[in-house]
Length: 259
Image 1 (cartoon, rainbow, N blue to C red):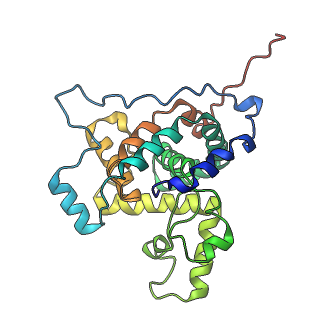
Image 2 (image 1 turned 180 degrees about the vertical axis):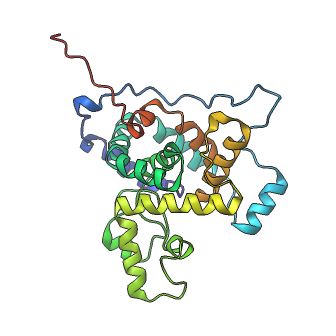
């Protein structure tokens, strides 16, 4: 995800009235996001979203690093996270992608909540109109689709030659614009990065398993987005009850008042 420009904040806010109301079966309890629960007793383990200078140097050497978002961008991100109409709209989009998330996570032996949390963040903070085919094919944007992936990810996964034609690049962008295909590519990216980090194949990452798993999750999130403040958000989103209900298909239906 890229920082949310202040110039279009008013446009985003103006869309609030156009967002559809939640259907009855989608009326979850939507409290403010809970704070990240300590994964270990204070003093025993460091914050899993923190990286040592040595780790950062190694990750920079291998993958690149961008540092934290500017303070203003972080403030706007925090504000958007508390805007309930946008949250409902984001959850509705995740609901439509949930079968694909479950399928791709199972195929790659990934934690589906990790995929859901990344998609939640990227969809929640997407810019209006950024998935317009005209704008995408103009080349002005570098990342596309619900997971905000670039054409280079298809190169990394061996799905696009490094030296590709303009027509091949256009076709790759079309793949990224397809939501289901985009989710599949996100799963492929997480599997690719897991292998590069030496995470044992067949090991399902769970933050509740302890510091090591939580730190691996934080590292994967960091490598996806490239911002040091991103892993903390992903670990927090992974505890969101509404997101869990969607990913695992446990939607809460209201009780009929007549009964």
